[in-house]
Structures are given as C-alpha cells and as structure tokens.
Image 1 (cartoon, rainbow, N blue to C red):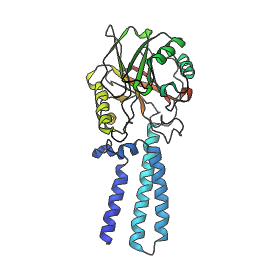
Image 2: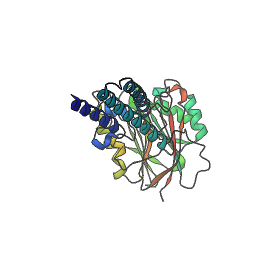
Image 3: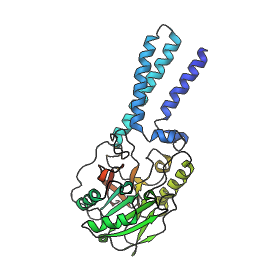
Image 4: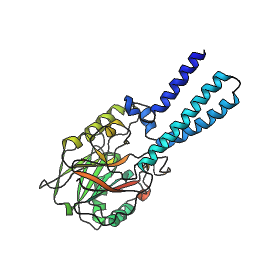
Length: 324
C-alpha cells in the first residue's frame, strides 16, 4: 500500500508540473486541459490554495508518517506549480500598456475588438477609434451595418470589409482599413464557423490583413476549433507580410499558436486577460491577439483597453513596424 501511495503521489506531482506547459506532451488542445491552461491566473490561485491546505493537513497527520509525507510532497509541489504559473504570467507582462508616442516610419497601429454584437451600443467604440486613429480595426461579432456606421462616425477615412456565415451577430466579422494604407480589396478568408475577412493591397504594397474569429473550444466543437486555428495560424508561414487580428479563442499556450510561425503582438501585456472583461485581468484569459509574419513585421508597443460599450472583451491595440 505504501508503494501504491507513493506511485499515486508521483502521478499527482507530474500532472501538476505538466500544467505549466501541457503542449510539451500534446495536451494543450485536449479537453479539459485546453480550457484549464487558458486560465493561468486561476490555476495559480488554485495551486497555491491546494498547496497551503495540503501542507497544513500533512503537518496535522505527522504521526502517520507515510500519509503525512506524501501529502507534504503534494503540497510543496502544488506551491511550486502555483509560483511557476505566476512566474509565466509576470514574465509575459500584466501591465495594460503605455502611451504609444510618435510612430516611426512604416509603423501601423492595429486595433481588435469583439463588440458582442453591439449589445451595449457603438458610440464608445467609435469614440475610441476616433481617439486612437488606428490604421486597421478588426471587429468580431459585428454585423456589416454596424461596421459601416462606425466607419461613418469616426474621423479617419476607412475602407470597410465584412463577412458573415449566418444571421446572428456572432457570425459576422468586419475589417476597417485606413485609406492612408492605400487601396485594398477583399478576398476569401479561410473558412471558419464565424465569418473571417481578408483584405489585400491592390498594388501589392502593404500588409495582408485579416480579421478573424475561430469557433470557441466548447464541447463538441473542439476538433473544429483545432482545424480553424491551424488554418489561420498557418498563414504566417505561407503569406508574406500577413497580419491577423481578432478573437482567437486561444492563448499562446495552445499549440496552434504556440507552435506556429506567427509572432504575437503583445509587448509586456501578454499576461493581461482580455476575456471576460468583468473579471480581473490577472484572472482572465488573453485570447484576443494581433499576430504577424515575423519576417516582415515586429511589434513595438501594445495596449489592452477596457471594453467599450459594455462588451465582454477588452480591446487590444498593437503597433507593428517593419522587421529589421
């Protein structure tokens, strides 16, 4: 029984350590691990709470040496895992970002926002775009008429591109491209459950731009989630100068993002949760991204902004500049 107890103890410790990077053993896209690793802040809190509780219980059971020692090992391991998760979050950066300042030559500002179908109105988002004047605005869960209305309300002149896969707002995606970037035309984006928008420069000069929204990894949709993410992130290796922005329903811990050639645009903000906006950023999940071809672009600044108009996603603004 003692041997079995230590075997179980070792297994628990190994499982805990693997939560730090489940992609190493191919588990980052497998339920329930994929849902858990998206919430590192909560994992850290849970591991620390388990560690403290288990260590205290082990001290109470010190007379039953085998059981107490096993619990002590589990408790100490849980504390180490909890600290490890905190370390990853802190290393990625928990600040909401800073003011961008003057943009260097060739820099492009990309804003991405999931508008929740305009549930809270669009005036706040229009005001935010007017204030920031980004070159590119990627909008998810945004019907075409809402995208057109936003473009009409803001100061910069934008070309508006839209796509939808059905009548529900969640199925609609939009992309606003500043006329300062030159003329763009829409082409077919990779097929996803929710609409995706791909705009290409007419003259071939400038970034290939996509607004994307793959399906979330809810039970029954996980295989689709995997394939949609793979199709989108695979563009970084196939399309020179591509920039993808949107609600990816995935973090950089999930293999389709982690193992792709795409470069994430977070600069000191990668640990700042973007969903849900009602939860502390440290306990949320960073699933809204700007990804890019690293051979052509590099991120030089990023900000996470509070959700406009009562949306459930925080907005993400990234400044990219030519690589090298």
